[in-house]
Amino acid sequence: MNSSGPIAALQKYYEVILPWNDLLLPGYWNFPPGNQIPSDLLLPFRDFVAKYGIEEMAPILSIVSGQDINSTKSTLYTVKNFGTPVVEGFLNNTFFDPLPFNNSLLYGHAEHLLGDDVTLSSTVVEASRSEHGIRLTVENHQTGKKTKVFAKSLLMASQPSTENLAILGLDDQEKAIFKTWSYGTVYTAVLKTNLIPDNTSVSFVTPANETQNPYSFSITWNGVSKYFWIIFFSQVPLSADQAKVAILEEMETIYNGGAFPPIDGPPSSEVVAISNHSQVDWGQSAAQLKTGFVQDLYALQGHKNTWYTGGLWCPDYSSNVWAFTDTVLPKLLKGIH
Image (tube, rainbow, N blue to C red; front, side):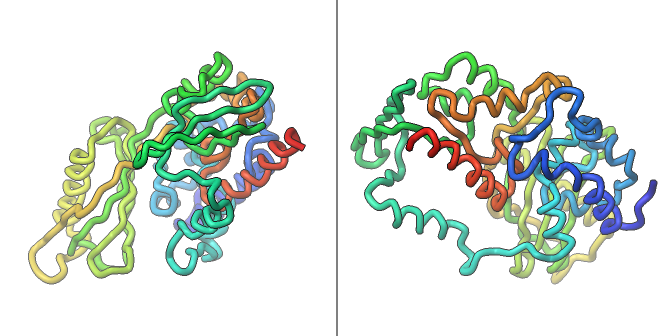
């Protein structure tokens, strides 16, 4: 089955994944076990793409979510971060940014609401969790002041790795889950170049058989002439300098291939800023998913009076993370009252 053009391919993708909404949104509370998992969700994504003939949606997938059309990971990993709400936003042009352009406003309002109960620039330095509740000691980085926190339950929104949560004294059940994550190399960057026209986006997709340069990235105009945002993903660890070199090499490829003529003078490209956004991610095989990884993950919700939210617990786009948090909080509060 062949699509005709990127939009048609994306619409076909949408039709295929739509029936999975109840399994994935806003979280995986209803994710099925074992052989009840839809077989397409466990296919390597590039095989899923070939099965439905949707290769032409590659540039949209790369630009909108930074993902690779030739990924060999299970289709679940693509769908959970490029699901129906994101596709609908693209197809219907309903993506929006907060006004003023400041996504920290929500956190500022929360800080105002909570008042003196908020500690900023702080780290948990001591912790105790039991059936009787939670005890934390929080130290301010700047002043060294320590604050004691006593609570019936704890909500964690940081990345749940064994390193990040070591202070909590993880038990074997928790370690068994958190040690299975994979670690991806992700950079965001700002590129200044006269090799791409304004109001234009470009995607670099890893070929299916590529082993030497297993990275992909998208370049999107940021609204200022000659300046572009970049989201860079690599299947192997790369330093920021190595990522810069890769980006500039691909800009040279654009120039040598004659994709666009240089604007205003000789060819020029510079990575003017780059930031490491590498993070832990799901890396479980199809076999691990079938043996109950998702169910084991969610069994940690409420374990030792600790609850979790964030992009590793649900499809990772901001509106959905908030919707998922709305499903966690009632369960947390139920044990308090």
